[in-house]
Image (cartoon, rainbow, N blue to C red; front, side):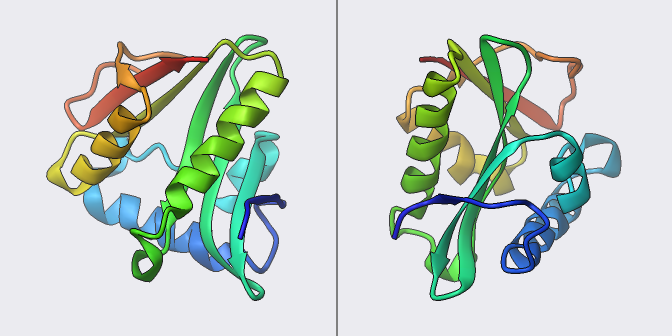
Length: 151
């Protein structure tokens, strides 16, 4: 299995995009949910990738260009029953490769500060991301945790 480019509105990925958004809404106050629905991802012209098992998306992720040298990871999600199989690594590696190819020098992300997001923060930390200040219009928020990585 390897990540492939797909549109966020592709019917094969919509259930996983919705699942991700529902989890974000259940885990954070509404004012601190920065996940985008499929239409928002589509309008933002993000590079969106998915890993499929048969014709069903089991992992997704997106890369949003902030400017010519800085990108943001969006909507990284692995279906719960498929976690621990290295799918997040596949998605992240593909998105970082795409960022490098696009000439980006840095990739940042926003995730939650709550315990629910502890595994995500640890995953990004293991992959070279470090804590940073809010970026690209984000503001300090006790429910948000910001990370960045030079490429």
